[in-house]
Length: 161
Image (cartoon, rainbow, N blue to C red):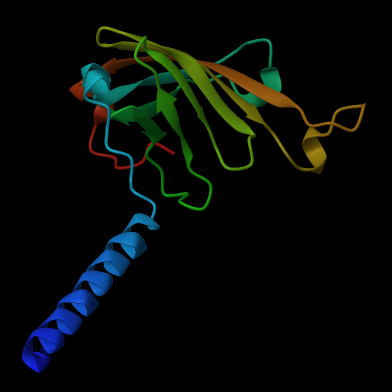
């Protein structure tokens, strides 16, 4: 016996199944954005404070400057208008912080304990005036001391730079 209506329905159902499976396969090739790690939420917040130059590097200045570091779901960054070369990185579940810019010349490493962030900021200066005798670049180092939710240090500035 031949049932054309059943064959037609079966053919359309098979096509729909193939299209659905193809859609699922195509969707799986798209990279998924990593969801924030909920165990890292303990570090979430805006840390504001100062970055004080190391006196061993007198060419790097002597005045402390305001700095802000934001942490959310394990991701850390310094908010800035310089979007082409952001300073960003990660914090692990033990509070170890590591950030750098895209060219690796601006590094921030440190720890967060409770509401306090302490870190070392190193900037490898570029340009003719900062060349060292061996042809490399000079560096500047600063100590960062910041607190989470310190409103007096935050001010109204969107960018401390």
